[in-house]
Length: 255
Image (cartoon, rainbow, N blue to C red; front, side, top):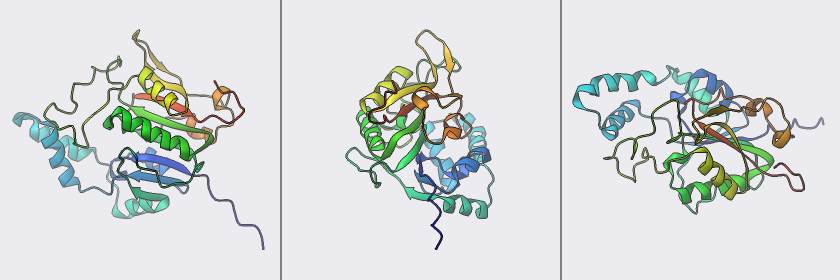
């Protein structure tokens, strides 16, 4: 018998945005075999809009226009398309608490990415989850993380305190519990065992830097999925603070 074809490399979409919200340029990348998605289940859009309106505490005069804006943000995928998205890879409902163990073996994934999730965790939760990501990633793999550049960004005003509203309780899933910058996110990745490499960030001197790797050299030498590492087209909220964490390969200096 001929040998079985090799299984596709596994890539992890951590805290995945609901596919209903994602533009096609992203679903074309992530809704493919080999991806595992940890995220929230398919949404009830009417309930989502109602909750957003309540949590963000819009003035009465702005509620109608805000509701319309929320309603029109969702890409218009057909039910058949959405069914294909959810069945193309592996989807698991995901909620995280410190002490949780991700249900994957060591050295499982060759690429991980997360967009605008770690700001919803406190620092201890973030480091614990990054350590779990380190455990399940293969040596040489990359975790690419995007969060709001809360205070240093020069392309927008700093994030408001207590975002999305001071009236939003700290227990609410939309509450931002951490304010990240390139220095703190890089340090968190280092503490979790990764070698950090900023990809898009603002410095304390007010400089905006975009440094998407263009060739698999330096710390990216031998990293799987360089077609993903050399692109940002699968991110929805741009610009953002984006920092890569590279899991070291034993005996190889990637500093």
